[in-house]
Image (cartoon, rainbow, N blue to C red; front, side, top):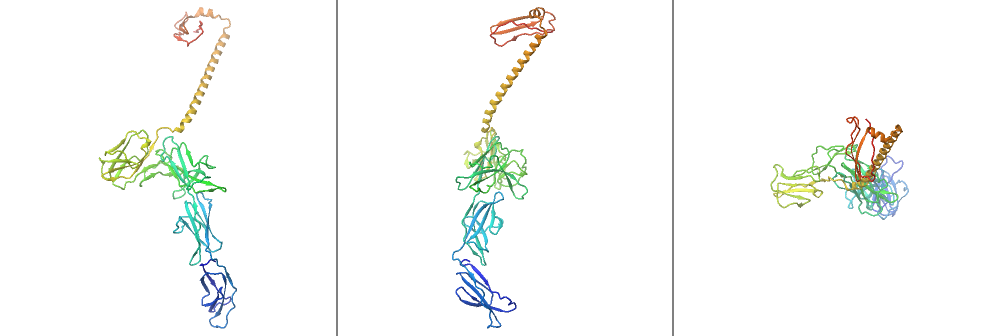
Amino acid sequence: MFRGETITLTCEVQGGEGVQWEYEWRTSQSQTFRTNRKDWTFTASISGDYSCKSRSTDDSYSATEWSEAVRLSVSAHKPKAELKISKSPAGGRVNLNCSVKPSSSGWSFFWFRGEKPSKPLTTQDAVFLSNGQISVSQGGVYRCRGGRGEPAYHTEFSYLVSVVEPVLRVSPRWLSPGSSVTLSCEVEHESAGWSFYWYKAVPDLSHKSASYSYELLPASSNGTADNSYIIHGQTHTAGYVCRAGRGEPHVSTLYSQPDFVWSGDLHPSASLSKIQSSNAVFWCESGSAFSNAVNITGHNDDLILLSPVHPVTEGHSLTLGCKWRTENLLSKVVFYQNDTLIQSESRVEMIIPAVSKSHEGFYKCQSSGKESPQSWLAVTSSRPDRSSLPVLLIVGPVCGFLLMIFLLMFYLYKRSKDSSSISRSDEQNPNCDPDEIDAEHNTYDSLLHGDVALYESLRGPEDTENNPVYANITAPHSHIHTEGQFRVTN
């Protein structure tokens, strides 16, 4: 028992059913008093022995003996709750365990989030596993306290326990062709020793509310010492999650909230065709796929900025306009990018002949003292990512080397084939004198000019119409001058 706690003692007479009794109580200070009720409720103040006896209201001279004394130990110090954190088997959650020191029974526990607790947590805020344990998935600082009795006697609050939820940031927000995506995981009050784990968020359609399962990204199973992670080759809208851990045994933070990189690709695995909502980036989810993303600016205001929904490719032209909800384009309008006036003179439209990455940002227009809501303009790159250059520098020389090997092998093959043909020809005519053949069948005229041999014509003396004719054959530079004899077969 603790000083100030309410306690109730009950005095019962065994075998005294049906009799009207009055009760006499003896306190720890040997004081006595009488009551007509068998229950005595009082506030504990000091330790001591308590006992009771009873007598019939019809016979004031007959009474029971004093009961055996009940020893009450009353602590002068108010108890304090103790809160501990442990890893939950459910992904993305941690368990909080509350107890009272010194230990005693009969306590109910109350949970609070924030440095200045107000209302206790409910089943909408946490999963209540048992009287002294809850499971939470939201980062922040938590505390607890115990209570028992009626009216409730409360312990002191526990010390604050921090449940760390890292913050994931994705860059860039909109995908460009061939660009890489950088994930950064930030831990509040970050210190040394953290390992970081990276996950891809996969839509889980088995839950009515938006929910994801997490797939560990490559090279992340053992964690990374660096709090950033680069993804190459991402082409569609995707969601990512991170968490951190350290220590032995390993204690992990909560999973971060999912963060997304958006693609305006109109041919993804899923497609978003129509939405009705206000300012935001929208996409839909189907199975394990994300649709293309669109940037929608709701127009509840009178002045509207006319801007493209999908990302604009670098080098393309862009036209921004401004209009009243019920009227055509305005003639005197100024435009702002990221709250900075682009040009001071008013105009009907703003035309950017060739969009660049520097044009990405939030745009709005002003006219007649009115201002439109901001709208995000995304710019995608039309150039390949620089990260592909090292690959080209490697692949190019390798392909060139393989081509040279192929040409060399082809040359050797042709040379070998020609040698075989000449050898077979010599074997078929072992007794032929080349000079006789030349005299009988062919006439050759050759002219030698320096390092170049020109063969103007080759024809046989007979049936010249059917014999092949070779004219103007120019040999490459040669340092050996010889006269050759060719045989032409009809």
